[in-house]
Length: 289
Image 1 (tube, rainbow, N blue to C red):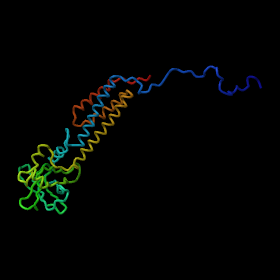
Image 2 (cartoon, rainbow, N blue to C red):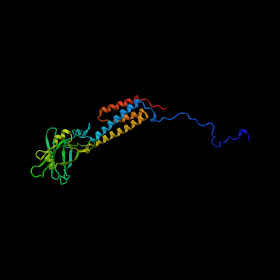
Image 3 (spheres, rainbow, N blue to C red):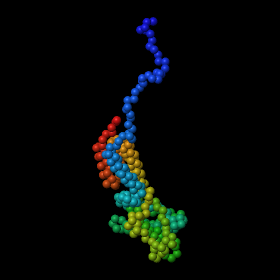
Image 4 (cartoon, rainbow, N blue to C red):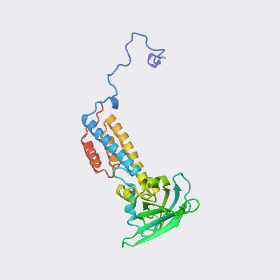
């Protein structure tokens, strides 16, 4: 075999110590997003977004609670009731005494005042379990009276404002059903809150404070909206922290869009969201070192 045809030498092991290194360090290193120096404008935009997201959380809580802030479940329901046809409300309920026992043979009467100032009354008497049902009522705010007919001497009367549900929107149901549990005051409560011990009128107080009796289940759609607002605010806040960590304008822009749609009736907070969205276009692009 000639020298030209001899096989190449095979590597029998690792090079011995002292030989020149096969690999040399280039000095390059990967810079993690958390190690990059954040631009001051990125921090400012993130701070505005966090503040706006907190307002979005409060807006969601406002929708869920419905008795504080700008959102009031009763006003929303009454606004829908004003557009409903007369006679389309049904009141179903139960009267209990303060100790929780059923109030049997109690009269429940609803006074309905129409737009033409005519007044009519619809009433029913509770059964042995304290239950009653009154049909043909007008949706909206009406006056409800409960009377204890079984009491010897003069009857005990208590009056409330009641908000009757309109028929549900976007359905074929022609009636709005309101379900309430009514508590009839005890003799001690009558003695403490009425002048003659037989009549308590809560109507003026309930009208002034917008605390009329209403079916809380009718506010379910507003509670769902509130939960949605809160969820979007939390997602937007998470996207904000990711954008702050990476300095990515696109992530912060996405966060600003999500947070903008959580504000609802909070118009000033909507302006903050728009400002943050505009500022994301002025952010520097993240550097790759």
